[in-house]
Length: 216
Image (cartoon, rainbow, N blue to C red; front, side, top):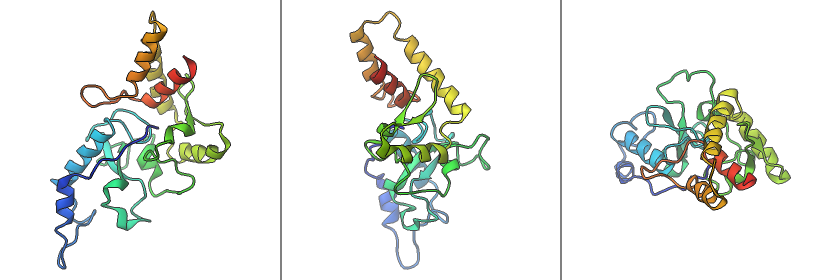
């Protein structure tokens, strides 16, 4: 999981919500549509570097949906709060989502303040370990372990599909280190911490960065 630094909400969303009056109220289900919704979706993708908020796979508007960190069912007042919105893989047009279900669709209405590792928490990466096998594991740090394990289970982050995708990404990154000096490897590692010229992070960069930091 990679930390997401939230930006200011899009001006179009702010202006749309400001239209509220006695006869009309902005509502996620009733009237949050074009052009506001796609603009918000694009803003979320951009601030996340086009990777899923939970698993880190590459996403586009077509292959992702707008996810409520705190679900609308329990927190209706936050349904249009930009700081509560993130972009998760498995598109919203995929109903039901394709099997296996993971990330936002798997999480669905679940949220626990104490057991949910939020990608909006600056230390979220510290809750997980990534061996070269492609697994995601909870940290050994006792204070963080329960939340990490619960989050992995509730979001199905350790299913075979995601393990295999992480392993492929890790293997490609490790292959790129062949014949490099230690200094060059460190520069390569730093590159995984930043988006490229198109504003995109490398898919599963959190797992790759973990490997570089812990094994090089």
